Amino acid sequence: MTSPRQPTLPSTQRGAALLMALIIVTVISTLAVSMIWQQWRAVQVESAERTRQQSAWILTGALSWTRIILKEDLRPSNPDQSDNLGEPWAVPLSEARLSTFLAADKNNTDDAPDTFLSGHITDAQSRFNLSNLVETADNGPRIVQAQMLAFQRLCGLLNLSATVAQQVSNGMLESTPPHTNGANPPLKPDRLEQLAWFGIDQKTIKQLEPYVVILPVQRKTPVNLNTASREVIAAVADLDPATAEGLVQKRQRAHFKTDSDAVAQLGKGAKNTDLLSVKSDFFIVSGRLRLNDQVLEQRSLVQRGGGNSGRDVRPLSREWISSSEPG
Image (cartoon, rainbow, N blue to C red; front, side):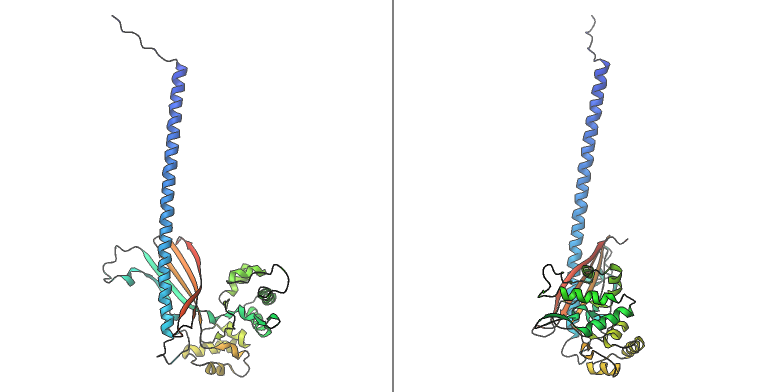
């Protein structure tokens, strides 16, 4: 007895079924790869955000540490109340592994994450304050000619165009309230890169960066002769660069302890002596943290003074300079 013959599909139907199976496998594989990629991407984003948050908290702690240093520098028991480059706050922190500060036993730090901290404190009053270019009078804001001339001299020493000082001064005037020139006045800059609002190109801003600052205060701030560069001293006091360099050499041997002592070293030809000092109230704190393969940098402007002790240090502004990989 013969068994019944099994029905067979035509060759065209077998080819269509095979093609459909291949399409289904391809679609499922594509969806699976997409789901795996999305999950991997979500893990990477979460990891990067967690690293950034950890870095931000560590840099915030480092800022509190620098505030203590600046506060202790002005303690009443210290007879020398001047600020100079020989004090602890002026010593930069080279890149150091964070575990060396936190571990009680330095021999047991192999399992600690690769976290490295570095930073430095800069005297903001070692630079020319662009806010000094404008003062508010009874009839509104006006340009302070002595300050604009000093800024012009500084631009000349830096080989910048003579129009830069006038351009910045006019911009600062127009952006200072109360506004009297009609609608849509320019915004007042808080940071140097915002000088681009006045038409200053990035190359010029980069050249000015080590020598000028914008402090958010209404009063004029003097330049600290113990910390200012030769160019800033020459521009503000209207001295030739050689005389300013001689002053820098003198303070390296022995810093100036009083305003009168410092001004006496300038000679009788010095100008704007009321805007020269040996003390500072404003500092720029820069911190850099390298955690694993991420780098986070923070720059803060702090003001010292006020409070019950007269030594309180409070942040005025904080900005993230960059967040990138070490390479």
